[in-house]
Amino acid sequence: MASRDDIKFLSNPNIGKSRKKYCRFRKFGIKYIDYRDADFLTQFINEQGKLLPRRITGNSLKYQKKVAVAIKRARHLAILPYVTDLFK
Amino acid sequence: MRNYEVTFIVDPVLSGDEIKSTAQTYSDLIKNEDCKIVHSDHMGLRQLAYPINKRSSGIYYSYEFETPNGDVIPKLELAFRRDERIMRFLTCKLDKYGVKYNDDKRKGLIGKKKSKSDDSKKEEIPAVKDDLTKIEGIGPKISEALAKGVITSYVGLASKTVAEIKAVLDEAEGNFGAHDPSTWGRQARLAADGKWDELKILQDELDGGKPAAGTSEEE
Picture 1 (tube, rainbow over the protein chains, first blue to last red):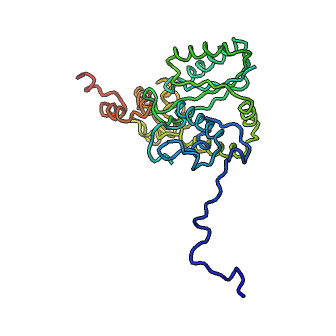
Picture 2 (cartoon, one colour; picture 1 turned 120 degrees about the vertical axis):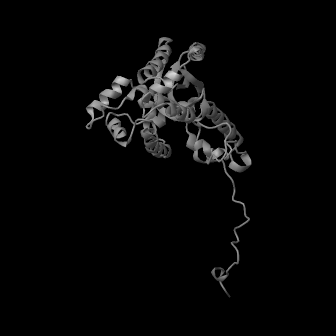
Picture 3 (tube, rainbow over the protein chains, first blue to last red; picture 1 turned 90 degrees about the vertical axis):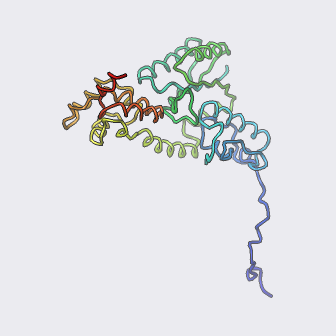
């Protein structure tokens, strides 16, 4: 009987299986979000400079709120834009 | 004890000394109120994400300080609001994690962050080096001579006086005596603020970087 390795799939069988999302702050133990760190905060905004929702970033509610505050502070200090196009 | 962090943006058009004295004013104000400055961070000239007061760049300063009570904050913020040299400010209370984060960052414990900031620093240095030849009257050779006199950016050029620029030119090899730097400061200031349209208009009036006698008389 053919072993599992011999079976060739026409398409990748892992496609369509959603990878489990996780909160990166919980996982890596990040307790404080720096509003001056523009590189880090750009991970949580889309290319128009809008905040990404939790369902995409996977953040827990506690840290999503902190991310939102940090981004708003960065916008006030002109570290991040309020509105833009093709940001990334 | 409470920990606060205040970040503010100083107008980049001011000269180097004025910028330092502005920052000094506020560090003195904080110290005079029984507060201890834990760390002062000069983040330097940065591009703004959007224009403020028609400026496209600003000089960032950040102070972290410790205070027995919050009395200093209203005084500090009132001073910021009254000061025309300050473009923006933000005061934040730091929780224990914030204090720890800033401490770790200073010690370089936040490894990933450090390598990232190193990269961005490398990127910043060429960004500050502006193309001075865009200013009318400055060619590639004068630009080189100015670079030897540590003038590489528009802001740097704008902050120098005519006499200082002339001194740099005299020191440099080559005969730059015929060049008149009297309008370079004005042009550099416009360039530093990103007012390219205004610079174009000014350059149209100028004749090889010198104030054209004919046009000014007509006006």
